[in-house]
Image (tube, rainbow, N blue to C red):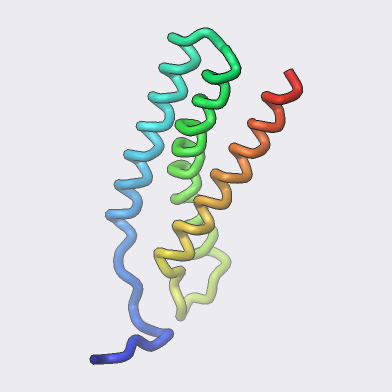
Length: 105
């Protein structure tokens, strides 16, 4: 079995970007449906956080990819797992901030 080196080429991120657009659209449509169709009870406010997390995570993928390409080492492109984890952290932080803001109302 061949061992992968640290300088192995990273796969194209085209599929990941397509998934990012799908995740963003799904999240935005979910947020729009919740905001326009449901009365803001505490359960609905918590339900709002799930599509919000999906939308922010999907929107973060291209920005994290760009920042990794711009400020990373040119000889070592960003790995797909690092891209996904960083985007998930961005979505988690944004969702936590919205959750904290909802608690103060």
